[in-house]
Amino acid sequence: MKPLWKNIILAVLALFVASLLFASIAGTETKQPAVLSLSDVAKKISAGEVTSLVVNGNELQIVLKDNSTATSRKENETGFSETLKNYGVKPEDLQKVEFKIQDESGTKYWMNMLLPILIPVIVMIAMFWWIFRQAKSGAGQAFSFGKVNVRLFAPSKDRATFKDVAGLKEAKEELLEVVEFLKNSKKFTAIGAKIPRGVLLMGSPGTGKTMLARAVAGEAGVPFFHISASEFVEMFVGVGASRVRDLFQIAKRTAPSIIFIDEIDAVGRERGTGMGGGHDEREQTLNQILVEMDGFERDTSVIVIAATNRPDVLDPALLRPGRFDRRVILDMPDVKDREDILKIHVKGKPLANDVDLKMVATRTPGFAGADLSNLVNEAAILAARNNRKTVAQEDFLNSVEKVLLGPARRSRVITPKEKEITAYHEAGHALVSAALKDADPVHKVSIVSRGMAGGYTLKLPLEERRLHTKAQFLADLAVSFGGYASEQAVFKDVTTGSSSDIRNATDVATRLVTMYGMSEKLGPRSYGRAQEAVFLGRDFGNERDFSESLGAKIDEEVNAYIQKALGVAKTVITKNRKALDAIAEALVVRETLEQEEFYAIIKKFGFEMATLEG
Image (tube, rainbow, N blue to C red):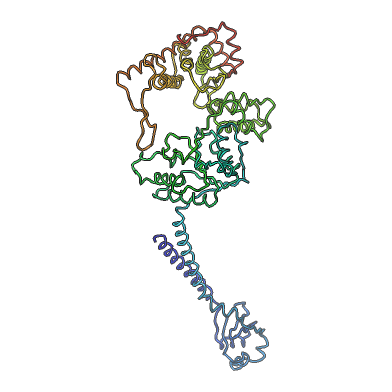
């Protein structure tokens, strides 16, 4: 009601302003030329002051010799000439005046009569029409508040198929069955197979969950409705459930059809973890989704595809058979899949002859599909900035480092002393990595600042790894302390440049002891239990499940791993000091050493391999 009263007050004010404007306009229109009586007109004609006279009905429009105008009115049903004679005007005086006779326009007459009445009425009608239209619109919005804003995928626009999704072979096979069921359901129902209720796509961010859903839409040829789970939730309890009902009603009317819910963890989190209990809006929405997917009504040809990167927080009722029957895991791509993904993203981009996408794929372990798409785009941008017509291999390799560490900061001014310290620091990392059998080979060493790092050493594995051994972890720990040990050996001091290395090494050593059970003294046991936060769900912190004395032993074992790794790093630096100096000197001059240049330097010296026992 408050907006309606507000609109009425505004209408009254607008009407008042319009009335004032009309009154002012009417006031200016009444400001007519001088009005003369008939006797005055007769006197002026006799005196020869009138040049012309127009008779329009009973109205007289008079033009005087001084170009001024005046008006007057004649008598009804009496000729104007006869009237002038009665006032003593001589005929010869009348001959000096130019007479014009005009018939009064009926339109003008009625306009003069009706406009002063019609204009306020029209303004009032327009204002009330606007008020009622606003009220009707508000009422319509109130009734449509529980309607869902679902979007129907148009296959004709930017159509994607499974051919546009590289890798994910098993995931595509699972979804291909869903597409085939929708296209030819009789083939499956003939042997008693039932249509799957839901398919849950699970994977890390950027692995292609939404892209795979778009490919399903392109392949299926059935109505495909897509919506984000966050669009269900409102501040008013019950609105989300209403929108879920509306979504499934729309999908059922066009069945067979597919509903794609992106980021379903926005409403699908485990119930009972908040203060609102069963009256929480999110839980009401989840309850409605559970009922719609597998409630009393089972005869439906609607398949729900949902995507999430947090399957661990989803409610168990959402994951049981009959709701999300299939759970499709999207893994991070391996080197072959990364190469195929790069081939898709470079389509339409002019490439130089030296581009080797296999080498780019080798340098990008841990990159998801979205990361590779961003890498290709950054390479194209870099080529355009350098005014090149094609994208070169150098652009791709520079983009890898830009995505990993940030853009190069060549304009950063550093002193020669800091440059020397950075060179020895990175040379220490590279030398220790090259000296240990279980460490990853060095691909690049640079002292060019990128992001927050003053320099970096790029190490990449020879092949894809799903499992990590204890020896590999110990080698990584030693490599982390390579820069620290190098600074200590050369300058007899250490800098803050090793802070991130120390932090990463501490994290790795802690996980070795508390998570992976790789401590010989403490044995294969996990220490610390994930604590479920009441407000935020899961994995908010760790709860101690061990005694104080055992905690002290854990600290001792973590410190033992760190000291052991530092000892190995110092041994490598001490035994190969000449190689260290040569690498550092080359970095000061060239700033960057590629893999071939680095190994060519250390081969000149009697390079000694170190063991993890130090």
